[in-house]
Amino acid sequence: MTSTYLNQRELKGFLKLADVMIPGEGDLPSFSSTNFVNFIDLVLEEVNDTDLGDLKFLFGLLAIMPNFLIHWSMLFVENFQIGPDFLKGNLAKIEIGLKGIIYSLYYSRLPDHNADGDKIFKVLGWETNIPGLQKQNNTQKEKELCNGGERPAQFL
Amino acid sequence: MENKIYDVIIVGAGVSGSFIADQLTKEGMKCLMLEAGPFLDKDTYPTHEVVTSSKMYWSGGIELNKNASLAFLRPKVVGGGSIVNQALLDRFDEEAFGDWRSKSSISYLNNKDMASWYDQAESKISIQTIPENVRNRNAKIFLKGMEQNGFSAKALTRAQSGCEYEKGNDCIECLSGCRIDSKQSMPVTTLKSALDQGLKLVSLFEVKNIKTSGDGVEISGIRNKKDVKKFKAKKLVLAAGAIGNSLLLLRSGFKDSNPSIGENFYTHPQYMSLGVYKDPVNSFKSAFQSVKSDDPKFRKWGFKLENVFAPPAGLSMLIPGHGKAHVGDMRKIPYMACIEVAVRDTNPGKISIDNKGRTVIDKKLNSEDKKRRDKGIEIINNIFSSTGAEKIIKGNTAIGLHLMGGCVLGTDANKSVTNPEFNLHSSKNVFIADSSVFPSAPGINPSLTIMALSIMASQNIISGF
Ligand SMILES: Cc1cc2nc3c(=O)[nH]c(=O)nc-3n(C[C@H](O)[C@H](O)[C@H](O)COP(=O)(O)OP(=O)(O)OC[C@H]3O[C@@H](n4cnc5c(N)ncnc54)[C@H](O)[C@@H]3O)c2cc1C
Image 1 (tube, chains in turn green, blue):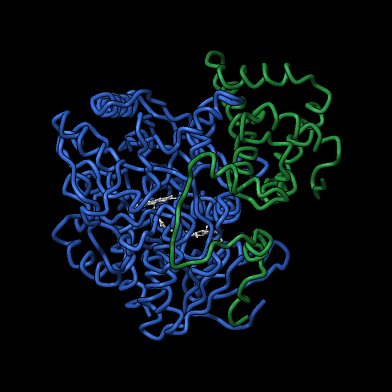
Image 2: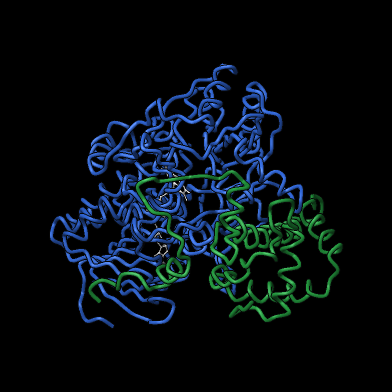
């Protein structure tokens, strides 16, 4: 488990939160029992420096928080309705930001050692096809393409 | 700095940029197009949603308004919105143009004068009406519910050339780019012809600054997050979209000479609801969006209903909560139908930058907008209830996909940014004709009108040479 942006403690905090969000149930694996954390840099490399600093601080904090407190905090963030606009806004930003990272890694059919991505899609009943095309499953290639490994800048 | 002086530099390879590039290069003009996103194609579009959102949209997927009540999806890829959008095309009606005329005082904004520009835009792409026989159960539920509640609906018209649903194609996949080149995205239509006609395109190039002088423009930016480069041209076309254009002009110090930059920002805020049924709905199969509301009452009430769906990661953001309850709802995806209300918003927002240079989007719903939203949601609930939904899930996140305004058209330089000839009020060398020039929210899909305005603006650019 490595990341260019998060240290081991921050990764531990991230995984604790991710398991509160996706604890695993029946035939659906918990977040931490998959290898999706290995793809976290896909998302983090697009986050600006200020937000990344905030995320690192938060994950570091979560690493030492008990799970029940993380769960309560999430409930608080999700249900906070009263209070000043700026506080509501900041809590909503935290909720959307954290869910965005965790859910998009879990529900993207990413390839991992156990083919968990495929399993999850099967359990969800998500079956889409374009029969004439082969299913691609080369996330590293996709990432490279989007980060400049694609066609050369034309005519420069 | 490259020594060459181009005739025109175009910032943004989206809908407007591509249409303009096609027109200008056809006349033999030497054009350079600069685009911040990657240049992908049918063989390289992402197949994992997290890659799509993090690499084909700005800011890693979504941008939020100040109080995080609205999430904006802003494409960042060669082809812009035409790669990831649903490609639904509609001409504006007199209601939309009437509002534009009253806000801008521009008389050509009417159906009659715009007709020939629409004709030209439509001739550049293949447009098809989605046939009845490919409607999935999501569409059938929508149609039945609309009928039972006394409202009319009709088939959608889409920029596509042959989706071959009968072969079993599930077109929700094309929200990450169409892998069979049926969707009429810019790289297979106008951008393709512009490239064939000699357009130079640099992808992964984020323009950071614009300088204008009497005889031309100088553009600087960063390629691939590391190499700083500068280019010069006689004229500049800003086609970076509503947020992109506003930010570029603000960061380049144009606010003093154009006080309205960033003002009048609209988004058609969209609220999705999910109806959960006893039997499978499989909303993700076949043509995942094929019908729409077509009721004159909705136009009067200021919203439209769309019969949509989203891939799993997108749905996970709509479904409220976390933990086992959230997973429990995710398991019901095959049993879900989905309808969204898109509000024709009346309350203008504002795009600005804070003292650290960060983007700030101040956009709220006023009481009229909330009334429109709530009326739409009430009708959606009635549609679901009358068609046997066992549970209704109100979407957690409101989204803005139609990002419009910020550099609006008008005759008054104090209230608008772009003049009727599509020039920045303060510079004859800068042209804008993309979604940022919309004076208000039309309540109708914007792309076709962006195409028409872009062709119109191109004629002005060409005649100035
Ligand atoms: C999911 C989705 C579905 C949609 N469905 C529909 C639909 O069905 N029908 C419809 O009419 N509309 C739809 N839209 C909206 C439509 O796609 C947009 O209105 C349209 O693309 C706007 O065109 P544009 O030329 O103004 O900007 P865009 O097409 O967004 O292009 C702007 C380009 O400029 C680039 N850019 C921005 N800043 C810079 C910079 N500083 N340097 C270099 N490049 C820059 C961006 O990366 C982008 O590629 C949808 C949008 C989304 C996101």
